[in-house]
Image (cartoon, rainbow, N blue to C red; front, top):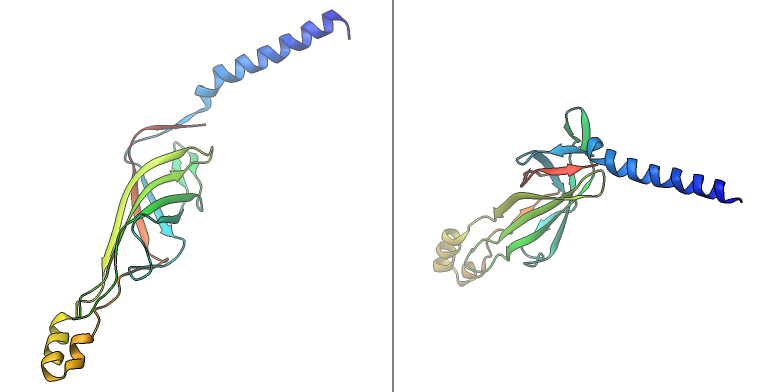
Length: 166
């Protein structure tokens, strides 16, 4: 390969790299702060088995479209954490469970910070437990209802800030 062809090839490569870097912002779309995103748990969670701090896996329910461009696809992964978990206990005390969603993944792989929380309490059976306990000692050993977040539940999240997506 002669020097002319080498210089020509290097020039074309540099022009391609520079023009793609200049045009990239023109091709980016802005996902505004406060954009609504519907999410669904990938598994059912229970206050009796979940542990505070454990990671939670979710999926986007439907495409998020801005200005006719899909920025987040349905099925895209989202992440969260168990913020609180308590087993149901004796004397009819209910269990509880809470999760906080932290991020959603865009079509370009960008992790978008989001805000959402979901919590649930089990059935409070304390009064029934005490009444039964007064009639029969076994009533004091009755547990409250377990808290459960079902995988069919839809959780509404919102983006925290403007994010550019390529």
